[in-house]
Every structure is written in structure tokens, then in C-alpha cells.
Amino acid sequence: MNLNEYNIDGIIEDYGDYIDNFGASAIEFYNFVIVERDFLEGVKDKLSNEQKRNLLVYDLNFIHKAESIYNFLKDDINFSEIANPIKHWWWHVDKIAKGSLSIKFDYTIDVNVTA
Image (cartoon, rainbow, N blue to C red; front, side):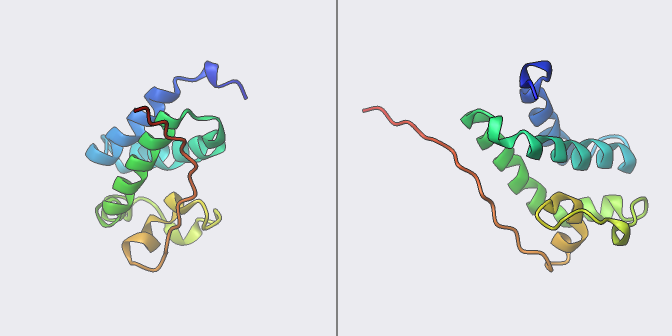
């Protein structure tokens, strides 16, 4: 996959913005945040260190807001029908909100320090 075909920085930024503002509707939020997060996971190994850091910050914010996100989505999304693997935790916001899913982040981010 050629990442130059995508505005990855824009997708990551939009992901963070939707988490903060929830967007216009539950379906729009679900389609953008949950589905696009899958796309970002698929290209995570190709992201720059800055992009990985930004994604991690937004992921942590997603988890922090899991209860609010779940409450926003629960009337429109049947979470019991979601068959995605648990390692794709963003599909399981209901379990995160209820405290029944523990998440381990596995990111490698290089940090260069100059003196």
C-alpha cells in the first residue's frame, strides 16, 4: 500500500477531532472513527514516529471517553453482533466502557535526543 495516496496526517487528526466532538451522528462517528481506526491499524507499521505518537494520544483519549462514546453509539449500534478480534479494541467500546476489556498498547516509537 502506498501511503502517499492518503492524507494520513489528516485521517489521524480527523480521528482525534471526532473523538473530541463526536461528529454529527452516531452512524457518522461509527463509520469514521471505528472503521477508519481499522485502516490506521493496517498501516501503523508504516507511520512516522510523529504519526504514531499522535495516534497513541488519540487512542488514549478514546479509551478515556469510552463510556461517553458507548452511550452515544448504543442506540444505533448492536455491539453484541461485532465479531472483530479483541486486539482491535476500538470495535469493543462497550466492553471498555464497562471495564471488562483490558488494553495493552504495543507501539515502537523512536525518540532521538540531541544534546
